[in-house]
Length: 380
Image (cartoon, rainbow, N blue to C red):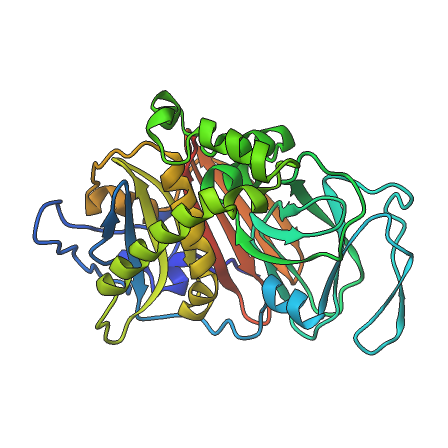
């Protein structure tokens, strides 16, 4: 089956239909903001800027039907998705109350970096790197974007721990309704290193530029360490970043960014928001783009909070970036490429070029579509 690229999905930017040639044309920076629309349906809107963060909405007049896909939050809330430690009891029940045997994934000893997931629904399950599940012996985050087909047998799920100081029986895994902030997510999705994940949780940001001015950040290492000492002794990501001292700042910051984002995206006619490009200070750092506005809407509140945590962990540098700089994050990378494929289900593709990394998740059925595209500037 031929691979359907982002360019093909969104009618082809500049008329180009190959992944490596994905392009975007933006106007020169400076007021008024008026990026050229180009030949395709994908364009940047005027950004929402607050303190040290700039969020460019990405809009499209086209979009795929993604209603067939189940998200992790939905699946765990309904009971259609079950996540367990590897050492859980061998027998579980299907949605039809039929007995289901768990495979012997080193049963008898749980694993920090692997859980067992069962999709008992009738829909394929979409997982994004950085999504958190809370409970078990430790809170974990999903290690990589992937799709779990409906009715699939129990499968080993690669994860990373975001609760360093606990390894004991806990409650059943539930959706934490959290996506960790970019510095942590990068270590999982790109570097795939557990120690780096733990360090990013505790330090707040892995940006070298931010580290030079860390004391000027609202969520400085000192603040985070004090929070761990008083409110999160197990170094739980959720307890650190949702504590009274930290969480209030994050929620207030995110609410203001949302107000400005809502103004920037108001009054759209024939277009919908499908993603964002995010800059911190004068550096374009991150983008998340989805196949449909409905998928973006589902993840937006979690993503906004994660972007806000990152902003607060970085120095308050009120520099801005141009639409041309942001537009670079809508171009396809050429460089070292890695692919993983589950035939007929999904294809995961990563391209790296220096500090830049692009990760795409293709659904291969029921219709080929690029469900999620992550583009980032590495901090480490």
